[in-house]
Image (cartoon, rainbow, N blue to C red; front, side, top):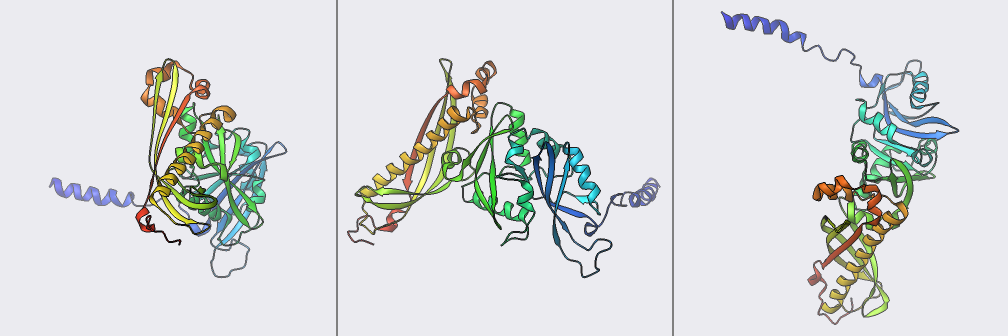
Length: 377
């Protein structure tokens, strides 16, 4: 009897729980936000970007449903007013869950990006894995026209940052990443930087942030040392003189295999050590020349020195010019030396820290190039 009553109750209650979202609307009756640009223009906040519309809106021609990417622009005295200005110009409800990228202008980023980071991370509309970039120039100019070789500017930006990150030449920074850096308080961070050249998007380096303010954009050609210390991958092609014939040039590919950051506190002095292991692939020489084991050993040593110099130079730049722990060494020091970390002011002490780098490079598959051959190839 009890089982029958339970079955009847379930039959009554279950349909009531399957009614769906009370505010549900078809996706083709929404404006799908693909990108957001935030700029500061004449004291006002300016939103720009792209929306995708999957069907003609009311009053437009009734052709077959398709996808149209449309730029937008709105202005206000603050972020909320700029958003209200956008709402007054749209004809369909907004869907932000598909947003691919947020681009902050260089001039806005030099003020303080923390308020907008808090907005993105606290509103349920956005994905926390949303990509952030810095744009060298007005964000409206970035999004107002289509680019070649991609469906939209937003996809173009996301694709180029994802590609360079996979190649070990960039850092893919999300809203969630930035929030974590901000909450740690004592360290800086990097956001990738892009710029538009006519109808193409170009990756141009890493933007360094201190206390959520942009302090310098480091050109991509000078990012190697930083990427070797903090990148999820590190791959770099370098050229070095032939040890036996300096006027000749060897091309080599360096691939990070292992990285260990350790810290200590000795005699009231912070010591940071980076142990790096990398493989090296000999690619070719500009002028074909004999290869032997002795030359490969010398090239290994030269590659190790080159990488060590780049790493050391990057840390020195962060200490002397940036005066900010953009590599996040403070997280390692806090974990390794918690009592000491609580006593010191990391922001003030980091520029005085001692840094040591130990780099070991191994020539990979050197047997494939016949090191004992006397023939040029």
